[in-house]
Amino acid sequence: MDDTSLAVQAETDTADDFLPINGTDYIEFYVGNALQSAYFYRAAFGFNITAYSGLETGSRDRTSYLLTQGKVRFVLTSALAPESPIADHVKAHGDGVRDIAFWVDDAEAAFDNTVERGATPVHRPERIEDEHGHITRASIRTYGDTIHTFVDRHNYSGLFMPGFEATDRIDFPSEPVGLEYVDHCVGNVDLGDMNKYVKFYADVMGFRQLVSFDDKDISTEYTALMSKVMANGNERIKFPINEPAQGKKKSQIEEYLDFYRGAGVQHIAIATNDILHTVSLLRQRGIQFLSVPGSYYDVLLERVGEIDEDVSMLAELGVLVDRDDEGYLLQIFTKPVQDRPTVFYEIIQRKGARSFGKGNFKALFEAIEREQARRGTL
Image 1 (cartoon, helix red, strand yellow):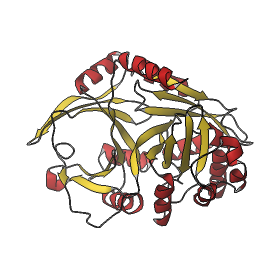
Image 2: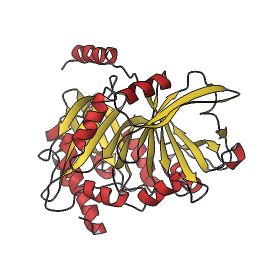
Image 3: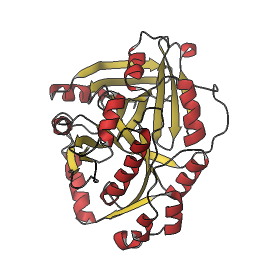
């Protein structure tokens, strides 16, 4: 499909989109200790600790830190008492994603329309305000204990939202690593549930399927998975949904489901404009990445054609490359960033490509299997 056709398709999809989404507003994690997690994300990933909500700001049941870098907003939240849904979430899942929030123009309409189409409501529309204006938000449920919150902030001029204040509780310098925006979020669901949630995003939220992969596309000698990628009209929100497929041994999806105790967000892909710079800084700060054999790079240019980057530098950092009809992408995956082998990150740079690295699936899976074998969970 040429650029003109893509533009026409995008205009058509946006025009038909009953649920226009401007982008990812924030991603909220429920964690065991928000203060310590904020230190980690600042020191290792280069996030700024922008705002705080807690006892000092009037919050009696939770503490939250807002972390920002580029257009990425993470909220780290922990409970102030054991009798809390937040504490229950952490007990069941460990540190994990609770909320993938959407920036919309009308949160109440988004909630009403999705509930009318079959969404399970979590929080009905509420208006919260302070001296900077007001925000309207509402939430619905998706897979597992994960929710989506619709956030309408066009009447708000404050730092983030009411209840948050600028903080100096963590005050040491941290250099950003070049993270720009959330490219996509990947969800793992139980065997047989992938099509259920594909239908949910299609029927309830008006998303469309971009691409699908079966066990022939994503498999090794031992394990396999199936995946379908859903996207909203303007493709600012992209959700690959994975389920395990039959294999000789336990797949990464099954391992995740076992340790997370159910469906949830497996990884978050964050875009950068200079992956070599970003990954170099992350490695210097102690972030560990999956590794592939050196032979991967021996045939890289034969497989993907001419690229701008030095292959020796890609090999040194372990960055993978794949090409589609519209360009190429560079990507790399961290190891899990908490004790349970659950949530990890993908760093991605797109140079025209809209795909998800199908040509790297086998190398990636084999790298994950090596880590599973070390953990004794393969």
